[in-house]
Amino acid sequence: MGLDDKIKNAAEDLVGKAKEAAGKVTGNEKLEAEGKAEQATSDLKQAGEDVKDAFK
Image 1 (cartoon, rainbow, N blue to C red):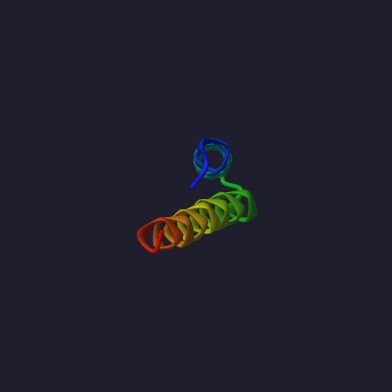
Image 2 (cartoon, rainbow, N blue to C red):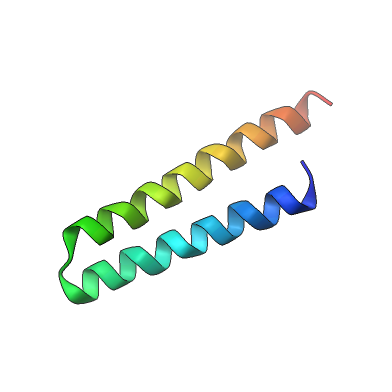
């Protein structure tokens, strides 16, 4: 896994956390759900990259 992929995944996770927090504060359930979804996507990408690294 390249460093640029790790940085992109970390950034996507942070954006998701920020959206989730903003959604909670404002009571915007849609924004909160988008944040959680972005975090889940980031986690899946990270897991996929970890599997690739394991087979190198």
